[in-house]
Image (cartoon, rainbow, N blue to C red):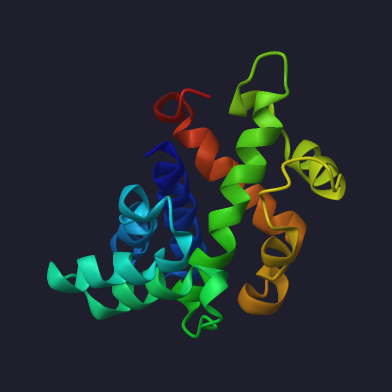
Length: 165
């Protein structure tokens, strides 16, 4: 759940950056892993089931599609700006959390974008945070990696208490 809150925060910040629908983007981030508990033992269905669950609930088709394509394992390229934002924001949260957890304080507020970028360069650090996808922020969103990390970190710092970080 904390991961979804972190993605929600980054999606909200990105929506503001791009002057997009803040509530829609935030909801997309919050709901993107709605199926995780059902598919955690078979991740080949992750995001496909989530999209179906959301469709059945009558959630906006744009949100359903963004949820569907955020899992790179399906090979469905993100098309819209919101889809692209979710695609790259999802793994960034893991990198930021891992970078905070190695600090003595374990607090996001003690983390700087430079700390995160230094950790980004360490291949053995937070291996689950797919650097290739995170780096696509430049191609997909037109944001330099440094700017993307800064936006993401600031967004997560705003909800640090909710994340217990």
